[in-house]
Image 1 (cartoon, rainbow, N blue to C red):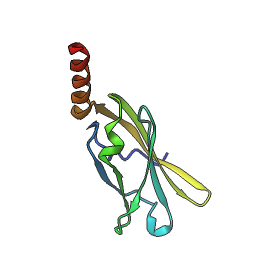
Image 2 (cartoon, rainbow, N blue to C red; image 1 turned 45 degrees about the vertical axis):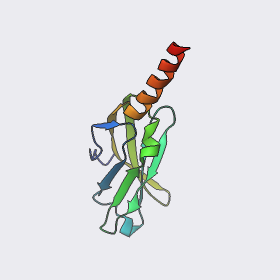
Image 3 (tube, rainbow, N blue to C red; image 1 turned 135 degrees about the vertical axis):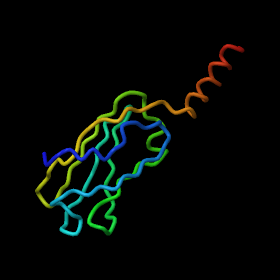
Length: 117
């Protein structure tokens, strides 16, 4: 592992978007390297490819739709840079995910309907 960058936030509310600028010393998109973050989100994992930001790094983004259904708890992630047959782990960590108030409201409405029946 090249090192831990610690660029991801410590916490995230499900349903929020996320955008982080990533620069890795010695690994640049200008030199043909690509970057991908893998999030061990529940119920389904997510892979986010870094987009070349034109400044020797990448922008990694998750949309609000991608994070909306994430379950509360600790979500691990890691990042790899790749070029041809080479692959190097460059980051890892965890983000604490809080439940979305949008989903909580939906379930509160469902429970109210059940109680009323």
